[in-house]
Image 1 (spheres, rainbow, N blue to C red):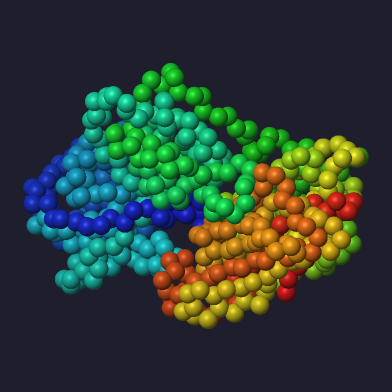
Image 2: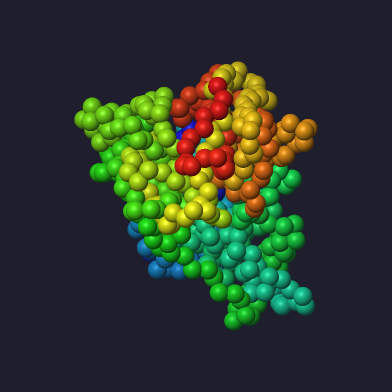
Amino acid sequence: MVRWSIATVLLGGLLVWAGYETKPTLQTLSWTDLSGKRASLNTLAKDTKAVVFVTLSSRCPAVPRYAPRLNTLSKTYRAKGVAFVGIYPEADETSEKVRAHAKQMGFKFPLVLEDAPRLARALGATHIPQAFVVSPQGKVLYSGAISGVAKRDVGQAYLQEAVGAVVAGRSVPVAKTTVVGCFLNLPEEAPAPKAEQVTFAEHIAPIIYSRCTTCHHPGDIGPFPLQSYEDARRWAKEIKYYTSRRLMPPWKPQPGFGEFRDAFYLTDEQIQLIARWVDEGAPAGDLSKAPKPPKFSKGWYYGEPDLIVEMPQEYELQGVGGDEYRYFVIPVELPENKVIVGIDIQPGNREIVHHANMFVDVSGRARQLDAEDPEPGYSNFGGTGFIPMMMLGGWVPGMRPIRLHDQHAVALPRRFDLVMQVHYFNRGKKEKDRTRVGLYLKDRQPDHKPVQLVVISNRNINIPPGERDYRIRASWRTPADRPVYALAIMAHMHLIARGTEVIARTPDGRTIPLLRINDYDFNWQQSYFYKEPIELPPGTVVEAVGWYDNSSENPSNPSNPPRLVRYGEGTYDEMFFIFMAIHDPKAQSSFLIPAGS
């Protein structure tokens, strides 16, 4: 599937602007731009068919996505009687910030700062960026998005269509559209302190620092930092919106299906506290009493790895667009008597890396394939081209690094080839990538427990267009003569997947719930580690089911109208894989266990 930047995926679920009432004062509004020039709708009426107001912000990560389009539209329609005005209405904007941001974005149209909050209120603005096409008489002809952001609407040029209609003397075809972007924070006086008031220092900082900052700090996947009161206040509306809908933190497992280590969810009480804090004006409280924000190692989640391996050289995609599977072969020699207890995979270019998997080859076949291909690595669509001894792990959007606990380890031969499978999806321009892997090692001990990886799958996927509840099933039976222990679990599907459930049925009739996800999202895939290993008795059957919605009602469906979807490794194909890390007491090393059709 198309891998959208982490910033776009987070902004994509924001609140739809629900309505607009024309403000009778719009016609009389006036403003002064950053150059000191005074203007109003009245003064522009003689030579202007419409004025386009666009809310902007130096802090909102959605603005750079639209800047090139705004620059093109303003240049195209300036000579046709349409004036563009950018307004920076947020409370913490300064002239220096706005000028620097405008230069970075390449804006050539007038920009308003001092009068921007008044303009935003008169327009009824709620988001950034949000466009308003206003007639010289003060009538709002269009309000909403600059263009489509949802995958199925990405080609919709809403603002351009509205402006084009005005210039041609026609009615605007769509007067209102969904707004996707950052919530607008207008200047306002903080409310007077109240008794038992919810404050950042006392109530909110402990939640933010333990549940949000781990991703929202420089160098990690969060699109903006949450490391201080000022950060939290600036993004307070977004925090309330996402937490109240349980979109953040992105914890997918349903209660009652496995107890997991490092569970990243908020309680109902915490969500209510956040909502109260935002509704009361996000008061700071006594910041001297707030907990210290956590500190993070730069570059690697668990600190500097014991061994870093990377693609032998940078790989350049030629910009033809579409999917490309590339395998890079990296010889690895572990230090004497070491086992692997953690792995951190860092894509070199997250804009084009759809996913990356790490395989172990001891046969030499991957080296042969690499030697036969003149480019770095080798290309293979439909499999690795060899039989892997083990899969060390993978990276997909939302995945966190993996660290094993309690004497569990990946035990491999000292020398092997790490084969890095990278699935690229390119949108038609030249890009470069050099993905790297950090391995965390420990001395091999007699009591170390080698970990195996069970891959439960079903490739017989054939989802008709319009099918709203397509089910696919797969299973695996544990050895008949001994118990094994489930350590972790992960589900991998693609774009139209909606959920999955995994249970274990024991020979004595018991049912052990292992995982259930009701709102599967490709952008938030994680490995979930159980708090304690789960014993699966001899002959236990692990049953997995996944369900898919290939209808137009599925907002994640990239095809409208829907099309037939089959199994495949391409962006718009589907998959069903359940990866389960286990420990088999009889095993002396780590290896891969394929299960399914």
